[in-house]
Image 1 (tube, rainbow, N blue to C red):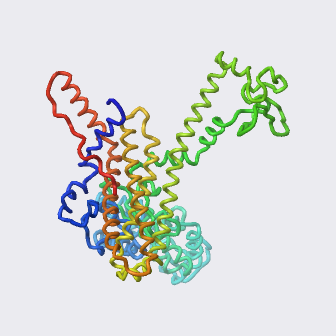
Image 2: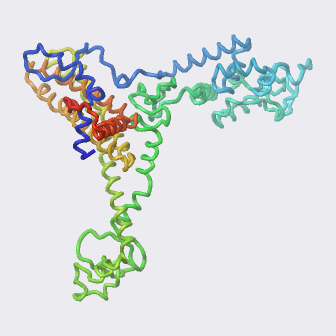
Image 3: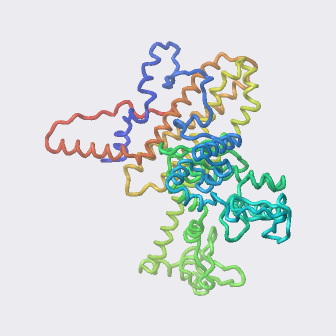
Length: 553
């Protein structure tokens, strides 16, 4: 490929990949006489607009409230109880042991029921046979009690109600391990079910136990996870297989099911892990120190020179005076060595190669730091813009939407296209933010992919800025208007069009990056084949530039 411009020209005709909206939309508005620009938008009913979750592909998960979790839990317990012909208490013990997997319980039970009973602690017959004595001895306090004050589980070991209550309370206060409670007898494996807790525990302890019991259904279940947002009590039931791990909770927090970090498509989890570690690691601090400071020749503390001459004085208690360039003692410097702003000794030593390795390391650290700073600043900037967009959306929903409805004499239900635009901006800012992490880890030797990636990223940025400006600034004239404006319908068409096109472009961008920019490799192969055909004298059809890659707006 002769130049980067040729490369971009080759990709500028990728109508099939990045311009789906424009394929069918070029002729959609041939009959329009009002001269409105073609945004490649097919208008839909505003009431069909979805919220944040609908901006992604078909959902492969379900958000569960507390009542949903409890209902699923009860249904699983009842199902196991009916199929295995055991009590619901025994069914709940089995399910907890096998991490609430109904299928696993059935498989293990029918494979070897006796082994499962002994492992889980559901004994078929008591270890201690029932006694007809008028008084029984508690196995903990060793006091004698009438039979009605003695309680035991399936094993038959007798303990008084007072000791049982203390034993259960202590275990519950120790944490979720109370769900695997066993008989107090050290040699016994019999499980203690929630029926004993309901009978003997205090109301406070019952509430704690029930909370642990409910949470175990999510925390022990491999198909479910709690939403990691602070203060959120929703859980996610995830169906694997689609390859898309992004999840949007009802609390509006979006996260990755696989790594539980915030949603990060199109970047994979390993890249996100490396990027977050890099942002928090001390390595960049060391790079900055190496690139922007030099060690004091005496005490070795790093010193930054940000202005002034070459005469440096280390801070107390060292107070060593030296030359910034050659790091020699300042007492050996003066007019004969170049004065305060130069150093002849350094120049001579540099020509002799004495500082080559040091300068090379400093230059490498400086370049690495500048590259990281470039990507990090833009990553953080898009995060800030996304947070502001969320705030602006909340402001619109609480105040401006009603105000706009009154001024434009339009029902709020017909203004959802504005909410859709803001939601799309929030989603696109998230995607754009993570493209900078993607770009940082894109290998330097894949030059063609880097050029193509930066072109796509630039187009995405410019398209998103157009949408953001339209919904943020163009909307103000209608909010500040004295009455209904005849241009409001044109604004609706423009904003809805920009939203649709931007959404489509970003979806295609995500697919391209998740696919590793495979189109670059395929086009390179086609280009190589075409060049080979020409060199052998074969006639080949010259590819035109087409109508170019459509801009998002």
